[in-house]
Length: 480
Image (cartoon, rainbow, N blue to C red; front, side, top):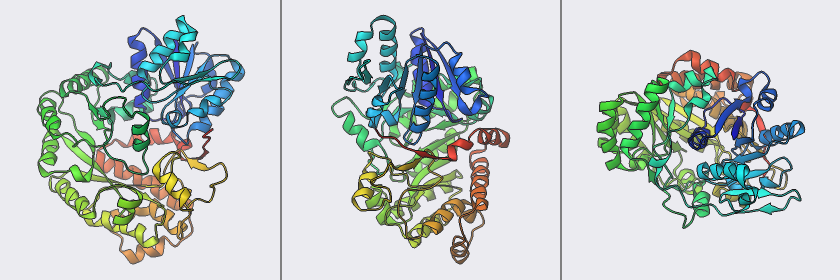
């Protein structure tokens, strides 16, 4: 069978790579069409001879999926499956008229079994774990999720080649080649899906799983030889979670890969010797979750159990070893005052952050923070269909006392830090009306900081950006 993946934006999705690799390992064909990379997106999809259309969907992107599915169904009867975070937590998407199947949780084995059933025995679909389906009378067949994939070494290498026809993505991603060395996160931050995901998979196997160092090296050698990758982006939530594993990886990496790379870390896990280890391996940038400069908001509202002192200590280790420091930050938090928001700027300025990645809170339905803001009355649209952005850089649904100032600070925080802007000037500038100049400054400072801290080439970033305008548009979420 031929499975054709469809997505909207020009960003590599590891989920698509893993699903494509699993299907190809079973002898199936796969293709990919990206709306922002095609002159005639629907025409290309319809002429692809697909036996199954597949979407990987995050909450906020579901409206586009439903619109695209409706357009496809007007022209053909090819079945459509939707997977990803949105259907994992909102499986009722199966009730939408143009959706034939949804997948919850890890999808590699489930999608392979679905395709096998479509080929040989349609009745088997009703018993396929992780897959929800329906019949011609719209009667829904629901299944439980299967146990986690425990041995990640047994999975085929991700199919990065499926993106090769999109030069703007492929060229950019050679310098930001995404690699996931494991699955699962031990933390339960209120704004993240992890807590809900753990509940879904309760008693379904080990949540935290890791590939062996040998398997990771084999994958990287293959990617280096096959695609000519130049830099690696380890996307795991915390690269320092397993120190023994990291030390084993280090020796092999220096011997066989020796490429610069970028990692994510949790401040509580940052130790001097681990920073030294990744520095010797070739780490050029460490991204760390700061989230808020205010201890109460960070620890109690966001449930991120990290103190300001721990952040300062971790940042000190990173900066002393000459590694660029990027921080993740969220403004627009429930109960956040302007002074609280400015605390986030002050903390980043104090620790010498090189790249302030600052977003606005998106209280995704199903997360603990969404429940909190509803119960505490921080939403304007509790009783209406909520507006949610696919991008977390556009706006927030949270009621804020100083919405204008906080939104402006989110747009300008990076350039304020680069210019070492004093607080009196910061306060004065953010009182100005929201305007297109601030939004342009945000985009330019974001690009500049990415180039400077992650040693990116300017042309691939610009080309990727030109294909990503739709990512900054507001979406409507449909949770039913």
